[in-house]
Image (cartoon, rainbow, N blue to C red):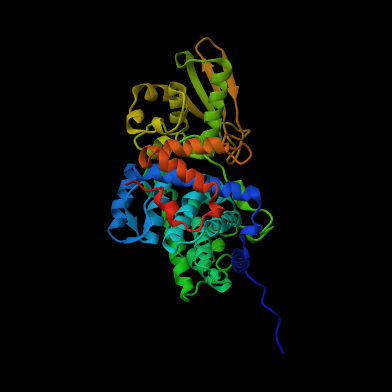
Length: 457
């Protein structure tokens, strides 16, 4: 006589969802975001491989992951699939140009994972789309389970690394055609060896860029091991001792978030795309100062003081005015406001070593102060008040800045961003061909041709 059937764990339910996900299950709006995510991330990655951090990660990984299986974006070099995912994921996050939402920066984890395996395994465009959707889905749900972005990151974890590894394992499992038990093991292995800490905030270290690349590498390794019978824990999320939630978040988690409305509420729809080359937490302030400047036509010489009225989180993470590294600039509201007011934008041309040392930028930053607003809390976006020398004062607060899923960039804006980031490296012709192929990805019989379009020759 059989005993009572064991209830499936959250990990097993996610694994079954990944296994059963087919192209025809993907709604048109989900498909559209998946394509934009692919385009946007590759553009950020091509630009990122040309940076100091990008060059350093390429040279370092070439020491231990040589291979001819997968391309490094924006170069003529190749690596093993794990090496390419590590490099491309790091490069995609190198200049804070990659998407946001989901696990934090899902694109810089999921897209390099999918691209490296799609090229080496020569899969179809449809398979790439399924893997992207599955990866974003799992990564976002793991973060929601682990308390959400605020609580998880407040503990010192960089969610892109900690939660992204699960998404990478899911995406890898799709492309490797793993069965449900193997997918469960892959998720368990990824969760057993995941991480990413916020210590970089103090000195601007490159480790922040490394986290999505490492998560992508971890997911691929987990997939390959599971494929060959190497088991992972089936209750990686809920295990009371040593489970992901109990270890990383103690009691501040909600297991129901892992599977709630699975297959109906596609989490990739939470994805936003960046209009500025800085941390997303800076963007609302940039939109607010743009609003004030456009409405009142103020000039920098008129400004006596700018008050950024935010939360303790705003003060802790975004208040730096002594800018010595690129990460300092990308995480600084005063820097972002200063370059936007002085040069009319806060994109890649304003985040350079030359601009960081610009005396005009440095002087204007000294007139910007981040103060505590007792009416705000948590991650509430700050308000901006500009006080002029003649006594006039103007204010604005933007709660949903440009690029959020509720205030999206258009396809045309995302394409223009891609051309600006990728065009100088791969050329206009290749860039246009890549855009065309991405927007008809489901018709692609092999990813090999797609990968050739994002390399330089």
